Length: 517
Image 1: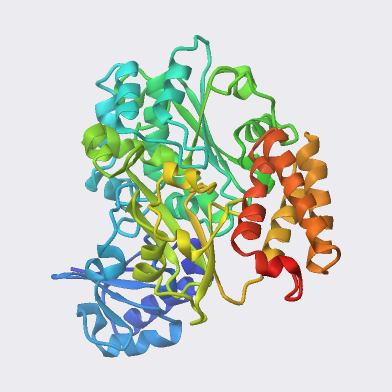
Image 2 (image 1 turned 90 degrees about the vertical axis):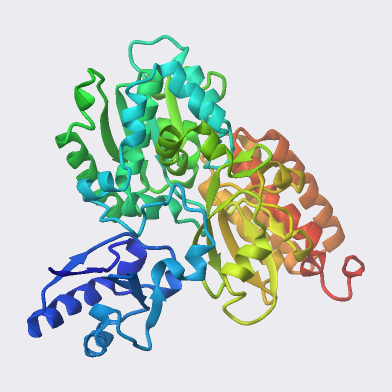
């Protein structure tokens, strides 16, 4: 029997040389006349160990990493095909503390299965949720999702069940399911990892959503910077359609659902749901006024469910295991798990799926191992480029939607970017304003003009020009953007600016200024 090896085909692993490692393994095995089966799995999320090579043994998978092509011959010499000892050996994969301390629900299969093997997906409880959904009435499916407490994992944290119920109860000849895979936040990669590591779970989640609300057409809107994700999704959709999990007669149930991948053009604002719809319709991606809500008049004016990748990918396990099983994870109104993405100045960056309630300090030190530079951590930005900068005094706050709202912070998509004590928060605050000025769709004045003026004010503050007056002006400008912008693009830009100003005031003034005291 062939020995089975796993080398990730995930974009991050490929960028670090996984393709060369895979080829070297096959070449060395052929040279030694050894029979191996090489599976290109998804990444386990321990990005500092990529490319991570795993070998299936009688005791379980044994991991080696990070492996380079030049290491392969020595690995064979050490009998790594049977779990032999080598300096890159990490032991049993499932026993690695980074993985063992997680609660992987949405990412249960990522890194374990072959992403494009339908047989592998089915062997790991794939499409069980869809099969159950096919036996239920649409309202019962919606109720199950509602009871689970699942909320949008894209930023606004709106209850998924309420959104679905609105679409279900809105009469229309055509309804749509749209997946927002325009993952543009800094330090985020969960959507990409899931699309590349377990695309069938997203397909299953979208199909269940379609059954729940009576939709027959779906679209996955993927950012153009994710070409590998797009390729894998298209291959998975073709395989699912061929096997009867998509198409005009899903599993001979009489239900129809078609699914297409659409490529975005790289505009950050298209992560906002109405801008995304405009882009899908072939128009310029600018924000729509609400009402009407997309759930009532969305894509092409029809009722539309718009959910993030992680939201939709969480649905199959809810239908399979039940609402109570999912709701048992988390705290308060933040039910289930969230895949946190640890990036920036961190020793062990990667993906950590944990139930809500874990703290930043736990993520950064128990999982991340502290800063990569070895210097003290100064500030942590949570929730993307428009998320607040949190000082150490807030690192023990449970990661929970309501707890973070109370701090004037957001969890967003779960992106966490770490900065050590060499960071200049005034310059980072300026970056937030500059980012908004570049990415604004331009429809509303507070965002379009406010961000441009914000950059000018920040430049004067950084240069030490009339600092007290400029800081007062900056606060006033942030108040206008916060309360007057049409969408979160301008409305959230003040979050990083004000948090930096409030928690790190010394970075905004010269040492001899009165504000520095």
